[in-house]
Image (cartoon, rainbow, N blue to C red):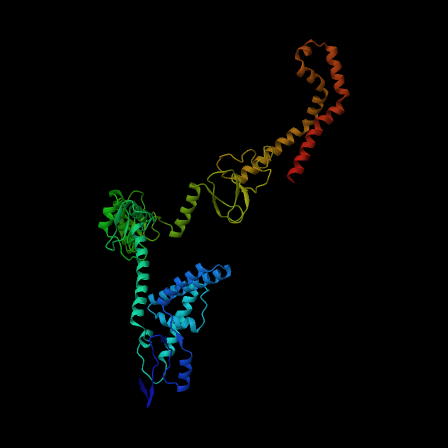
Length: 475
């Protein structure tokens, strides 16, 4: 019994029923709360109900009844799982049971949604319970306010402990049987650190080798997820070979020295020495091996040039050494490693020829295209140092040669037209041609003169038709 302002309030507590009560309300409200009391349903009750439901389902011969009973069993199983999880989180399972029934929370929803909703309602209930006026309430569990049977409580607690133990045993068995790196069965078990996490010996070696090769040598953590332990030098030495350990020590020394902003490593290949600090009057520093360097840009010394000018010069030199050309349109650097000489800029998508850097067309690499790079689409020739001069020079030479040959072309055509009968006879029957008399040869010559127009048409038309077809195809 609790006394408040001269009034007595009795707590109607029993071993079979739980009652949610609020202090400081009038007698009529308490009576309404008594009438709306809920019957307690514990985890133990659920465990007892499941076999009964399964027995009823087995005895039923109606398919609809079977489905209903099966649904009830699933809901009861979900309810048991939620209440067990609530207890593991440190909340009171009986309060959760009351909230599920009072708030009519549907257990057919997603498990995580129902669990979050019940926990939220528990927090709301505790805040409301603590804010009741007229009584000082200490933080206590709900089952301390609403007593139940001691035997029932022990059975329920035992059930929760057993569920937790089985889950832990399951996780422990999995972790003990599987390597934390390859997730397979142990081939050669090896304990890594004081944390006693176990891994395959080969997996641990591969893990350390990978860390060292990637330069991650200052703090190599345990491969087990969530573990904060780190490998010391002695443990690493026992797990890797001598060559890899020397690399580890070298990389670790470099990493520690890199933290010092006054340290500059020698740029000469093969030299692993460093210089600390510089002169007050010059950026020039000199290594023990004799290599002179610039302290600011950390490259070879560049007297008479600023660091920016030296960097630009070094960049252009690198482009030439790596055979890198710039896009004729956007000037983006492009390197050709293999393939044909038809290039496409990765930045502006401009298509050009790698050799002469002219705009690419379908006829650019054709054998009869004197204005392109004939038959050089798949050649490995070096790019022209002065492609424009080479291109224009070739055009001028070909144009000049054409002008010289053009006047004699009609005479060549007339000659071959008149001499066509003689050439044909000589080609197909050389012996008969030798036996011909002068009169026979003269007749063949007159025949050529007579058919001169037809022969001219036969000589010129095929070329014109081929040129026209070629033009239509590529236009």
